[in-house]
Image (cartoon, rainbow, N blue to C red; front, side):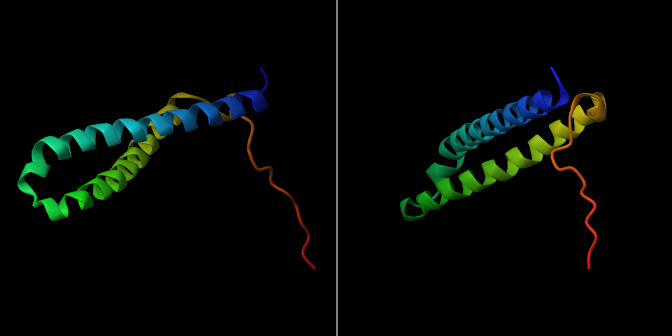
Length: 94
């Protein structure tokens, strides 16, 4: 496989991985909210908790994704296996 195919496969795999992290974080945070916090919150305010859980799962998945990608970038020689997405263009401005 060439570098362009590797790059496209990496982007596809990273996107699927990121979605799985979001879903996993949402399930874990929802179960924690439902089991521990929801009984102590009044009924009128319980719906806000799910919105906060959703936003927290997105933020947590972003942090986890960045940490995992940084770790992989240290282990893998990026220039050897992947093609740059955006090539530098030399434009002459008038």
